[in-house]
Every structure is written in structure tokens, then in C-alpha cells.
Length: 182
Image 1 (tube, one colour):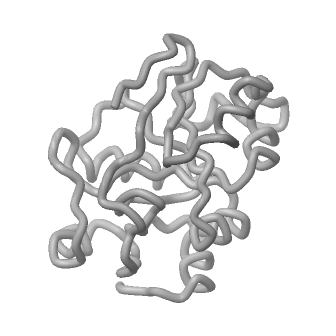
Image 2 (tube, helix red, strand yellow; image 1 turned 180 degrees about the horizontal axis):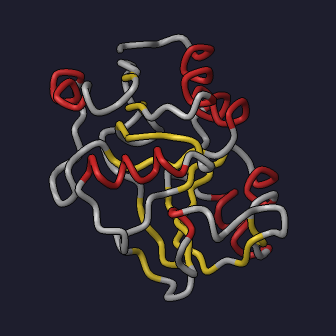
Image 3 (cartoon, helix red, strand yellow; image 1 turned 135 degrees about the vertical axis):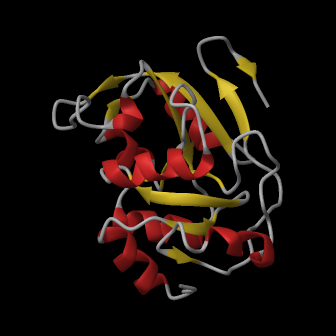
């Protein structure tokens, strides 16, 4: 189902649906952080190894700090990134967040990106953090046109046919090693 209304997108996500949405970089498979079944579905659709991270997109540092403990250095780095950057970060979880039940957070590190695109930030502010990964089969190039996305239509609950801001995936920075992986 193709949808473009922000209200409908939020409604679908809040109903634990998974969809294909434009991000501040490329199109991605998206679902809520607490939609464990949806996250598993995304791994299956992408044929992605469970050893790989799926980035967590947040709208603000406040939103991120409600989930995990974040150092001041990481806060400053995320807040000052001039281009979309996913940071792989060793984290400790806040007491209110269940680490044991979430297949996304079963490792010691998390991939996080602070979103600066206002359209997507507004969605995330209404729904909560989103787990989003490039729309493709793992190892293949990300898909960037509606025509290329349509073969996934029967595997997701909705597709948002808006243009992404960029056609480049985010940079990936390993915080502990202080090195860009992409």
C-alpha cells in the first residue's frame, strides 16, 4: 500500500507495521524499536545476518537518552555531525528499557543516528525511535526508486513514495575504534 500522509505513516508504525520510508539518506525498511516481530521480519526480508546492526534513528538526544546512557562526547559528536552519520557505540541500557526482549539490542553495541531532516524527525517524535536499514537484500546496492522498491510491496505493510534527500547511505563511525567504516 502506498501512503504519503505523515499521519497515516505514524498510525501504521504505531500499529507495529513495517514499511519502506525515505530517510535523510536513502530508502529504508522501518519499524518501531519495540516492534520485535517487525525487526525479525526486516532481518528476514533483507536476508541479513543477525550479527549485523540495524541503525536506530532518533529525533533528538533527549529521545536517545531515555533508552541508553550516552556520554557527553557522543552527544556532542551526534549533535555536530554535518552529514548523516551512524555511530556504532558501546552502550548501557536505562532501567526502563528491556534489553532481554529486544532482538535488535542483543549485543554490546548499538548503531545510532540522530536525524536532522525535519520531515523524518517529526515522524520519529510522534512514534518514538525507529529501527531503519537500507532497502535491499544484504550485500546488494540500496534501492532508490519506487519502481525498484515495488518488488518488496508484498513483504511490507506500506511504502512511502517520497523522494529521499540523498542517494548516499550514511557514513558509519565506530566510536570505540575512532574510525569510519564507510
